[in-house]
Image 1 (cartoon, rainbow, N blue to C red):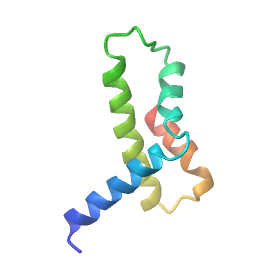
Image 2: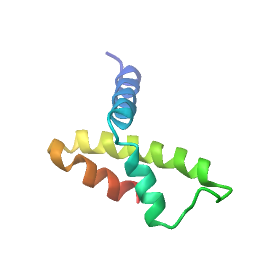
Image 3: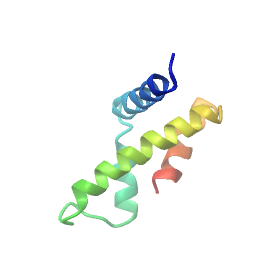
Image 4: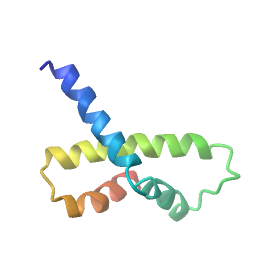
Length: 80
């Protein structure tokens, strides 16, 4: 398998994890902690950036072989 296909599969797995269950709440929780409200003109952009950061931290967690129980804490800190 080529490196590019492997990278695409990693990102696909990361976004599947993001959409699985209520993991999207991590992104919204970070925005709430930062006091970024829905009426902020950049809110939608920040949500998208948070989701990309979520995926990147998920891939880092996989590569660092973190335990699945600590994924969300590691990802939350990375998105924050």
